[in-house]
Amino acid sequence: MDFYLLAFMLIILVGSVMVYIYYLKEKKEQLDSIRRGFCPRCKQDDIELTDQRSSGCSGPKMLTFECLSCGYINSFAVDSSDSCCSGGSCR
Image (cartoon, rainbow, N blue to C red; front, side, top):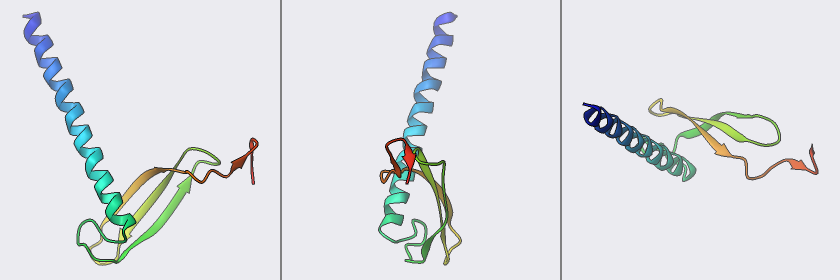
């Protein structure tokens, strides 16, 4: 009986990890399309950055994009590689 429970839990865990990996792959493909200037849904070039938030000098930025043609809206957390901190203080 314990073997079946363990096998069931293992199947659920592996399935959850696979679904999350697929989700991250889809998000990456959408962000790549947006960086090229096209909406991931309708493939038009009417995508624009509508909101940009940051948590200070370090940490990820939250970017929200919206397509003016089809109404696609999505947010992405991206690394802020252009860090504004220098020597422990913001410029």
